[in-house]
Image (cartoon, rainbow, N blue to C red):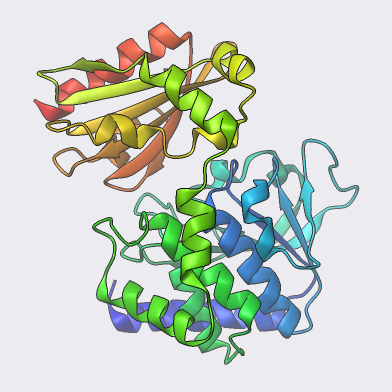
Length: 328
């Protein structure tokens, strides 16, 4: 995308927000740091514009991200679906419409949707699309949108932006850590963000459940295709035995990917009997977004995911075989 094309998208997105009101704001199911940061960033932006809005997600925003919420609550759709439908929707960090999940059931048939994202696999499902695939995180796009709207960068908004950048770049270690990312991060630090506190909270601190789950999952570490592919698996029994939650699986996939010589690391997570979610991480030789798309998923070249119907063993067999073919 050229700078001129991006400028047109920013103007259209700003126009959408100025012209509409009573927004429903939704991020992808099982929100990570960028999804949560983007959700709350939009909330603070809309509040500063005196717009009405409702925040919602199919499930629950992890507790570790709720410091960004302030007075804003997020409806958990599966527990408390709203009784009304919405005509103006803002989706953040959703690579495709399916990532919105069950929340789409409360959209008006003729709804207008602003799609704000950074995934290369985004299919432009919005009425208005603000999608920049070379951005490290959706909050990077929201930073540009805040400038376009001439908004004040409040401490609350700054924390949201920094959080999304910090988590989606792996603590500014991944290859998506561009000069622009560092410029925005520096701007946030200059505005008072305590980066060291957020790093401690989000990257260093582990729950007891997370440690227990790590110990258990490392026993499942397996290799294939000349040790270029590695994976871990977590079953429902593992979660129960360790008293861990789905949030405690964050980062486990990296223990497979970080083994020397591994090109593709994966984590197979049993979500319910017969349904397995797969997280992919690539060293660069394999486009795991393309791999995930073969199974109905998506994401980035180096980080992606999908959901497979079948047993754990069936999911492992199918995906490992496909990854091996891609590497070959």
